[in-house]
Every structure is written in C-alpha cells, then in structure tokens.
Image: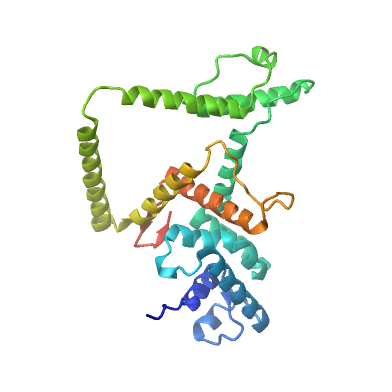
Length: 299
C-alpha cells in the first residue's frame, strides 16, 4: 500500500497566513488586494522558507500525517517553533500587529514567562546571602512572601522581616518541597478514609461526564460556542505523561546551551517538550479551550 504523501502546500498556506507572507510569484486577485498588508517574498526567499518549513515539519513530526497531529502540537509548531525564523521575513510595519496576533492565539509570551516563573520557584539559590545589603534583603523578603503565599493558599508567612533576615536563608526550592510534602500527606489522609472508593469514584466520574456533555451541547446550540474537548484531552494526556517522566522540581530549558554535554538535537527535543508542557499547563490553568462561531475568535 502506497504511503499517503504529506500536503506541504496546506502547511505553507497556514504559516503564510499567520505571518502574512505572500509569494513573489502569486498574481492572484486575493494576493493583490492584500499586497499592501502582506510581506511579499522574492523567489529565492520563498524557496528557502518553504524548504525550511519542510525540514522542520519532518524533524519534529517525522512521517506523521498533518491531519493526525493534535491541534496543540500544530499550534506549538506554528506559533513557537517557526516564529523566530519566519518573523525575519515580515516587514517592520507588520511586526507589531503579527506579534499581537500570535500572542492572542497562543499567549506565547505568557507561556514563556510561566516557564521562567517555574524555574524561579524551584531555584536552589537562597533568597539572600550573608553580606547582602539591607535593601537587597528586603527585596528578597518580598520575593519570599510572594512564594510563600502561592504555596500556602495566599496566606502571609508568620514571621517578621527582622526574624526572617536573622535566620539562615532558605531557598525557593525548600518552600516548593514543603508544599509538595504537605499535599502528599493530605492526599494520603483522604485515601485512608474507609468507604467504597470504586463506586463513589465511578458515580462522580459519570456525573461529571454527563454534566460536561450537557453544558457543551447547550453552549453549542444556544450560543454558538464550541469547547475543544480534543485539545483538553491532548493537554491532560501530555501533562500526565510528562509528569511521569520528569521531576516536578526540574527547571525548564528555555534555550540551547552550547556548554552542555547533551547534543544540540537532544537539547532541541528537551526544549520542545518543555515548551509544549508549559503551553498545555497554561491552557489548562486558563481554560483556554473555547471558540465562538459568530466571530470565529479564539480565546
């Protein structure tokens, strides 16, 4: 049986629309109408751009057909993997608008910031060091209070600055580990309650399933709002698989490290996996899975 050939023209079209690029050889009426908006590529640039798109598609997705790739992975490829390269071909007057469009579609800057925030939250660096200035210590204390609030249901720490600054400085990682331990102990206590867990869990699961399906059906029929259940499933599945293979206290890798003992290709895989995890985590935390048919605007 002959293997189905991937339709690269569809992928080119999607990326050219997002980044508002036009083929230098495209003389269609639609292209001429948009010529004052789109960035037109010459023949050489168009050839190089399409070659690089093909190379990246094959590198990231292998032989997987485009239609079988989840929307989460497609969005990640379109808005993150290809962004830095394709923005090189966007005219200066278009860049701000396209940056905003990408941010609205994927919240990419916030996702990257969430990765940085995670790395800060599990940092092994102490909040302050011996010999730090008073000003630096007070800023460190504000940082400590913010982290403490996150891990303790928005409560303030039961310690004054004077007391805190006289003690050996703990690390963000220590607060994080304490929160993980307390969460684990609470879960253990809940699971030790003596009742028929299986029946209760099954009943709750069925109630949730039918409730959610009902809400989705009503939203679709009455308001034209669609909930992307497939993307939710993709995100939950990816988060689950990722968590099984990674320590939650590990830092995300944001960029290639030439000094690392790990090769460049392997690092690229790690970076893509970490970014995808952050994307899924962000979308789940912000319930970013609905779209409105009337305006076709995605949130």
